[in-house]
Length: 262
Image (cartoon, rainbow, N blue to C red):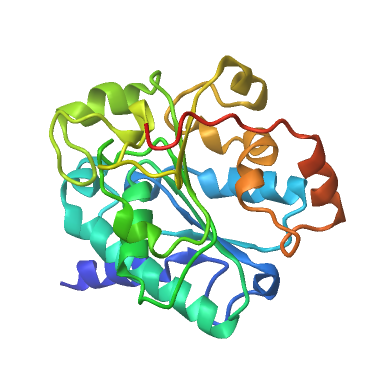
């Protein structure tokens, strides 16, 4: 029991740089990052560096949601991710209570995309985030995001790659984060919710992404260069970007999406 208490305390630390009250940069906006299983990826470091290069002035906060730090358990025991989602929802609401005009964005990687979507579903009706970015999502490709979209002002941007061996091989042997065995992951084939929606933008991996450190693998989409050139476009705004960010945003190539909701 004592050991589990230590684990729970550590897990509840949860957000790097986001203890209440939120850090000083939070007045410019906040981007929450949900890592994959076992919290082993360092995607928040790449996200933080890439957004800073693009001129983002807001805070980047990492949610440590794993209770076991075991990849198989995190992927297959859904209540762990659901508990993390409930905590993220509380953090989003607390941030917007403190900064009613603040801009909230959420980025999730792999199983962290399940935490991201379920957090949105758990928000009270009056709370909304700006945009959501899903990377290498292990949610099933046909997951219904209609409930989550009620809490999104903009869009859900889903980056996917058919070259992601974790999703096309390992995950299909285990299950998606929402519990489907043998199903395709949204990070491998795109997110195609029932009925479709123009507010889900699927962005397929392309060879030119390699120039920015994203080779279509499972965790390299958080390369600082890729974050600066592409992901920042979904997060920066006139409110959250400094002078340098406006210059960068005007120079980077626009990401051509797939047909929305296909």
